[in-house]
Amino acid sequence: MVWNGNSELYGITTPEEEQTARKMIVVGLWCVQTDLAVRPQMSEVVQMLKGSLETLQIPSRPASI
Image 1 (cartoon, rainbow, N blue to C red):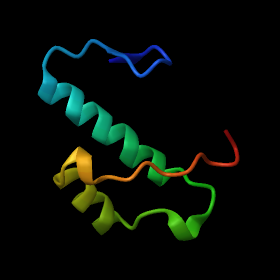
Image 2: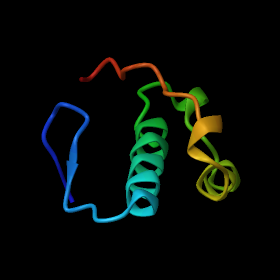
Image 3: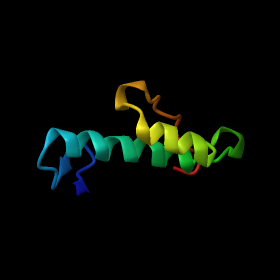
Image 4: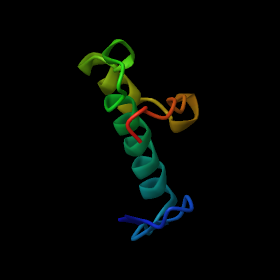
C-alpha cells in the first residue's frame, strides 16, 4: 500500500482493504500524538481497531509535523 499524499491509497484492491487501511492510519495518528495524555491506551487501540472507521475521530495534527 502506498499513499500519494492526496488521500488516495494504491495497492488496495477491495473496499474492505481500503477501510482497514484507513482505520489503521487513523489509529496510528492517535498513537503518535505529541501530548502523551491524548494517546490511547492499548485497550483503547484494540477497541478502535475492532470498531468502525466512521466512529473514529481524526486526531489533531501533532506539533512535530
